[in-house]
Length: 394
Image (tube, rainbow, N blue to C red; front, top):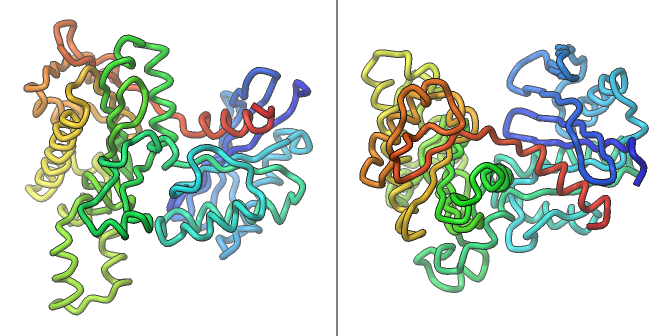
């Protein structure tokens, strides 16, 4: 493979699009630029970083149903900084692969059709990724595209962990626990193995705490359990998502309260979680500064549920050797980490306050029975590595 091939990655969230640009040699893909489009703001702005330089470029395009105009203008901006003719492949983050996809795949028409069938399983994210895939295909029909799946990392979980106590026929139809944030967990598992191979060989729980949040239990680097199950609503409370909820509450809201399915979906995804509990904000940075009791209660509930989920997962693993915090909250908010770890002293978690405040790579004391780490995640690197492997025929 020639030395100067370029590779693009697309990480489409519910309201943002992260773009990575990587240079490929015969061995690996190395990041040389990145960009971000925030669809929650108008007009759209493309924030581009190239080495130490950063640019904010206002886009003329608006976010239409197919995103063709937005992607076309993004490509024009990138062409002013990089040789876009050298791009050989585009890799995409796709949230749901169902039981069909347990690893990265080339996106031919048949596989794109299969992704369409999974939209109902991830209505907040799957359609967005497909919009980007189809926009790129329209603009560069000859460009190879690949998909990397958030669910694929959890394919190593056994059937017992993935099963709900529902009629067996429903499990066979795909009503089961899938787990998400797998690209982040794959990166952290690899990074932890490089930093602390003895810990990685044991029992580790990773807390991916961001706008969306979940936890994953690993044994020897492989997923054994995840707080998110059938959907990205499950598990711990998030910025605006509810987390685990008694299904009886949903039946009540749909029945006696007369809510529609669409109204209930909107509430669970966008008006619950930290925002719903506090009535102030879904952003933990705002809530930790706010002295009102509602803000304090939201943070307390968040950290209580995280600690409780770590306890449950420790039972799945049969012990705990390491704890890793990652993503925006996990990497940058020592107050949240301290509140979680204070509830985990019974598991041998002993935090060093100074290291924690400094966001040090290792924040546990030397005497702590459980090594506690802060490791920045990089989903785009995993997307690039998987796309590169397919491009190189590995």
